[in-house]
Amino acid sequence: MTGLRERKKRATRDALMTAALRLALERGLENVRVEDIAAAAGVSPRTYNNYFASKYEAITARHTDRVRASVAALRARPPDEPLWDALTEAMVRPWAEHAGTTDTPPSPELLAAIRMLNDEPALRAESVRVAFAVSGELAAAVGERTGIDPGRDLYPSLVAVTAAAAVQAGVAHWLRSDPPVPLVPLLRDCLRALASGLPDPTREGDDSWTS
Image (cartoon, rainbow, N blue to C red; front, top):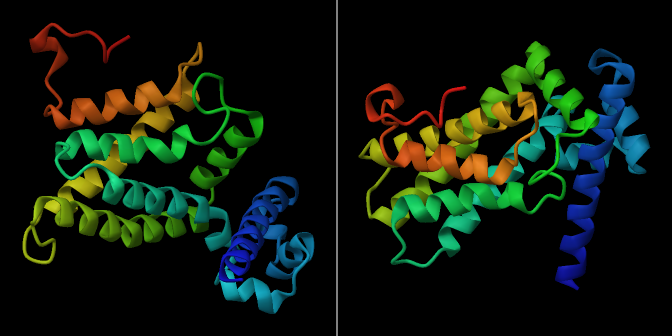
């Protein structure tokens, strides 16, 4: 019974996130109310407030979910796997599980959603808030894996923030690539380059990061 209840809750949350983004793209974010999102998802505003505190939170929630999925994936990696190998696979996994993000160009809907996140000040602010909130969870998972307390040492937080930034840079590059490039190999390249210390391609003779 618990499993069914949890699946229903996840389905409701996903419906609210989908409705929020769809309405914002159709009407413009300023013309969307929480009541509109709740109605589109077939729930009451009170139910909506059980899941999200604002329309901005509903729209940015998928980013939160991806980072938390990466945290869970990192904790599930083999304990003897090197940190950056485990972290790379964990950070890539949420993207690899979504159809259409590995070997095809981004859809117009995804492009519109990304542009909206970049252009709307309120959504940018919410994205920053979310990034800080969930980076702490990723830092905790890194700390567990390395035996380093993120409350006392900078290393786990530094790893978490830089890994998230590498993924963000990879996604941004993928969105603007012409011709399109596969996303998952690109993300792996970003994280592996970060793990190797981002060697200077002009000194190493490596032109893979220049065009």
